[in-house]
Length: 220
Image (tube, rainbow, N blue to C red; front, side):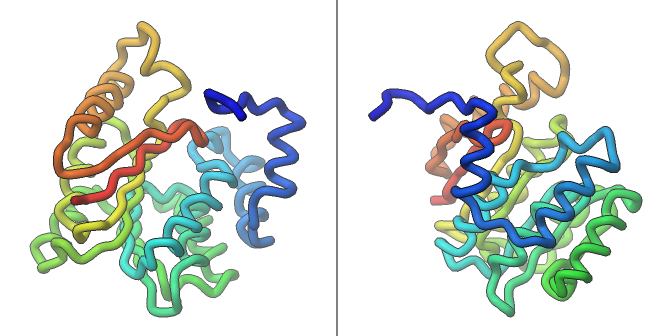
């Protein structure tokens, strides 16, 4: 029994990875390649967060999902693996360089048919989905992009999600900076959204201390 989340030592974290998650070989290869090939590898979600998101997608029976911020494609890959054959991800990013890695691994995993990648500002893609009648039709959304626009992504994803749909927001603990005296634009944006979601009567929400902090909010 414990009254708070256990601290993960290096040995305990390795045990978690070895025994607590199911990660496909192609997902692991992509994760390792990202760690080795770019100094921005910390932008990639952790494997335990990926496994948790895949479990959530299966749990809610998701078929239509949104991803805001794709990077090298790990989160999209693990979600696509969890989707049924007719499941689809609308993935939003602006980097041809990073998503070229994603495309290569999606093709190797034979998942490219499940992932519709849009290379332009995510607000444009989300607005287009809304204009095309997509409101209240998506099951799951994951937001992991530029922090200054988190609120814009959150509002649009709420429109697109069906009642009972789930949105995940990444980096909401921001390496602990949300709780100290850090005062840069990104930290302020995350603090503001955290406070907004907590009092938002449109959702039931909680923050989980997984990865860099993950908010889960169910649309009422």
